[in-house]
Amino acid sequence: VVNLDVLAYSANLENVAEVSASPLYAFEEADICDAPAVKAIFARHQPDAVMHLAAESHNDRAIDGPLDFVRTNVMGTAVLLEAARAYWLGLAPDRKAAFRFHHVSTDEVFGALGESGSFTEETPYDPNSPYSASKAGADHLVRAWNRTFGLPVVITNCANNYGPFQFPEKLIPTVVLRAMEGKTIPVYGDGRQVRDWLHVDDHADALLTVLQKGRLGETYCVGGDSNLRNLEIIKILCAHLDRLAPANVPHAERISFVADRPGHDFRYSIDASKLANELGWAPRTDLAAGLEDTVRWYVENRAWWEAIRERGFESERLGLAKA
Image (cartoon, rainbow, N blue to C red; front, side, top):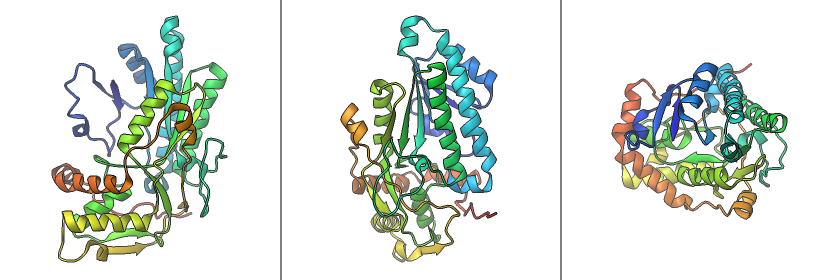
């Protein structure tokens, strides 16, 4: 496995320390927008496949700095596709036939749902934020390289991920860390937004399944079959924290409702039946158990996230810029 990362603000090499000494692992610090660097990495390592997860992904940051998202998510994907195409064309016939480019995307490209229904692979694109629009653009580029140049691709659109090692800007670690620090816990708007939650282990399993068995040119939606309102998730996390990291008051009393994010989608839900029926994948992590394990991980790994705090990240509110 070759790990290509630009080492931006959210990167942390400690997350891969367990595998860093393995002869089966290599790390390359590079920007996917740097065409010569990407081309050299292909030539140096001769990969059998590409798993494209590199992206700017935090919606609040996309509101404050949308062009960074366009650069990385759109232009970076185009550079990576071109490098992969040139490399693929030069492979021996057997390796060329086996090569795959797996583009990892988000359910946010489909826009927002009302109180019912779920996204499928046939849902029209309707992105509402700079982040989701940039990922939609990347999805379209991947399909274009498949249909125009024949590059063998697969695409996955996933639900919200959670689990250990998640950078503290995301909802679940934000809640856990701020609660443990005795700070207020921000809830956007009225907290009624609904998200489908997918444990990172289940997502990794789905990605490998699609890479190995997915039909070329196809898209697969990856969901956790676990839909909850944001406020419900936050209250569950607070209940776990009351047991695992008790404070002088119940953690839920620190909840503070704040101004909603501009363009905040109301509801996401994924129908992953295509992935289940075609490839036999289904999520295995129960949400209740997964959330408890995740809270416990952050409680027991305080040194990990305190080191991030020491680098200057404080979980302060972003994304309030308006036209």
